[in-house]
Image (cartoon, rainbow, N blue to C red; front, side, top):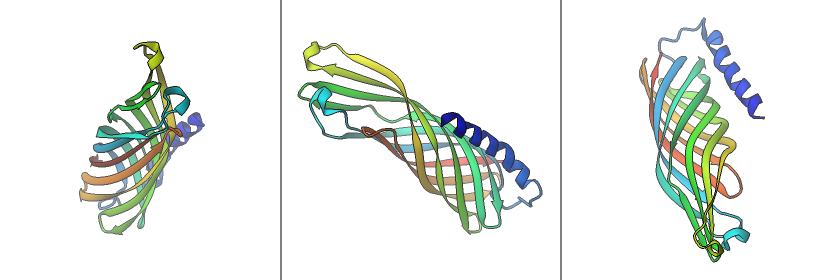
Length: 202
């Protein structure tokens, strides 16, 4: 599944410039872009109650960041595009139960996605996004019976990610956007992010 998505994302990044070659892109979203996003990220965690003795869901809000690069094509009022990103941030989440503690510490994230939307008015794009995201994380379990000993599992979380946003062209070479995304990595761990960002367009 991951190889298929990576291949599809790479293929789209290669194909869409060809589709746009003959278009007048002086005042459209057509073209390559690179940029950065800053987000308010909410990490939510619920562990197996058999491990630490609780079913409560804990959540923490933190600041995240992401660098992105992609390509868009505008066909009339329709915009399609592909994007890849790398980022990090967000706070660790801790659960405390009758039999110990459980902590998830998020690290770097990587993602590939496609988006499609409509230009509501000149220079304003409303769009939906869907793709796949990977997250490097450390999961630490400290059972009360272990007298302070901690078991750490370093792993790569992976899940479909989806959301929606709005982007406005400030000029032909600069755009600003706001976006909301959800990533349910598994039944116990979910990440939601509201981001604002800017892109240099070429």
